[in-house]
Length: 209
Length: 209
DNA sequence: TCATTATTGTTGCAATTGCAACAATATACA
DNA sequence: TGTATATTGTTGCAATTGCAACAATAATGA
Image (tube, rainbow over all chains, first blue to last red; front, side, top):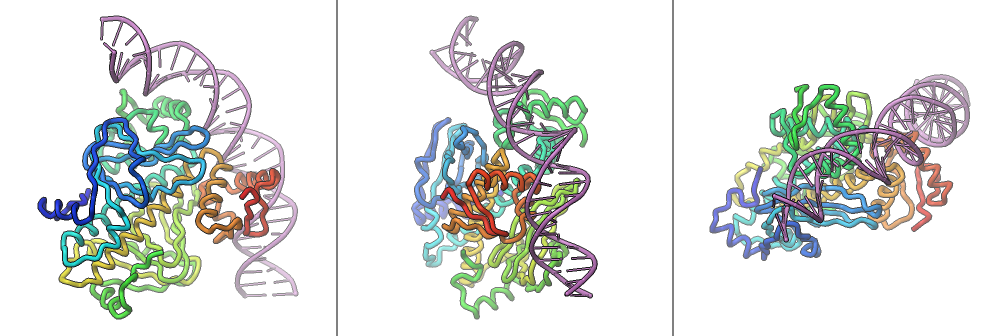
């Protein structure tokens, strides 16, 4: 995965952050960083792990995105009425914040590392689109079984392994796939009974690969 | 919406296309342009209208993305097994193709319009992420009613109008929302009966706004 | 214009799902 | 270590949905 600092020397990284008036902030585990999101910002996760979570008017919790090291998120989180978006850290997390407008409207006077930074951002956002497409691939499946199998397929393609280690709980997986937890549990049982998978704690093994 | 040629003079636009070895291709209405998608490409719709369509092993058709003027698509279309992706033109359509790797790895020797182009692409991909998020917002709704209402909400926010004019048919809308057409039809009827909306042909009017 | 094709509306029914409620485990932390 | 908390497993049941089949209407093109 491309880093925002790809092909930029450590020295220039520092200059860049100053030039673009970036803010580096540390968050403790289990803190909400939504308060930081004012205007059009871009956050880059340097260390740690966080989740973008939507809670709708029914109280339904959906994990919109998982943020690992190197991931980028931003105020491209469209917030509709009746919905609340939160970014929650699940570990101690270090994030660099940029002002999107500032970055885009910055008049470059020959800082090659600025151009490289923009290029890196382009690569990262392109990857993010790929992630979003995969998520859409899952969500457009009609049945829970097909959602699970698509999720497995994507994981298998990504890691090349028959084993899937959940980043977090089954509860979270259900929230990520936007399905009812107990219904997912039921379907996982069916998949086990039919010999498609086995599970051991938070490890799922695909038997049909 | 930002164009790939934003802040680039017509003269430099031509130079840019040559520099990046871009191909401009015209497609007739109702043609499949998938054949063009080899390797890691980026396509920019200059004129016309097209749809990215997935057909799964059940024969289910899903409209993944609608491509209007200025929109960008690419091989960030993750293709899993058992699924077929196609880009189909619904009108005569003009598309410029770029080689993504070529663009990214291009060593710039002082062409300022190249930097501007990369910046424009960044803005466009950022917007695309927003679109994807909105689609995910819809798809993560549990009921057909909530999917429709979320779709309405997004449209309303975008246009500021109570009237929604479908770009294409109700059949396509169902395929876009990834729901069964007849079930959607049933739910639209319910929404009408309960006074939430009225419809007249392909115009939907929101009465609760 | 007329005939063919595509879209839309409708409905019964079976399958799937969400929901609720609770038991069984596992995990966290005082 | 023990207790409170979180996660997982399970199930009945009602609600929602997809599917199929067909009629009605609209759009298309020869």
